Length: 299
Image: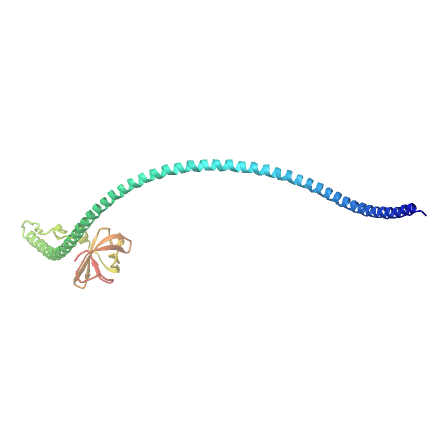
């Protein structure tokens, strides 16, 4: 073979080898391109899906944003209204505060005047209290003197009643003697005369004296007698053993005696058929009525 042929064969061989390398490289590169294309397609589809999802999310976000904007707008409007109302309330509160401050100042003046009036009233009250104490002491002294005077009067009236009884007894004896004398004179043809009566029965001069209610003379002439059933010294009430059936009436006066001693005077308040209740009027100093004491309308 010629050199040219050899050269061509060598070139052909080199070209074949180069072509084989190119084919192998192409085949390998084509496979890589296919995988790359598949991967890129998948990524593209994934990206499209992601973009669509993102667009949907964006739309949802836009809707949420719009809703949020509307909500915030409403809240802002409400907040503005609330702010306006609060400002109006603040103004009203300021005006009220000013009015209250004026009232507080006025009340302070009133309190000062009231304090002065209270001090004056306190002074007047203390003076009145001292006057009341003085009057109370004077009343106590007068009551004591009145009790002593009443006791003395009652003792004197008791003596007067005793004297009146004696005079009445003597008068009755005198009347009996006069009647006998008249009978004797009639026998001898003389004119009979009525003997004088020196003291009329039930004379008002023999009425016992009490501080408040005078004792009526008919009470003394009844001659009622009984005894005390029960005594309540705290309320000064006394229950006696005789009542309306025996002739006891309200406002009657009974004398409480123990043996031959006068103990107290009893004014009847309520009357039952077989008992009566009265209140103690005068009580002998050092003595207290008790159950079993005698009660009588005559001493």
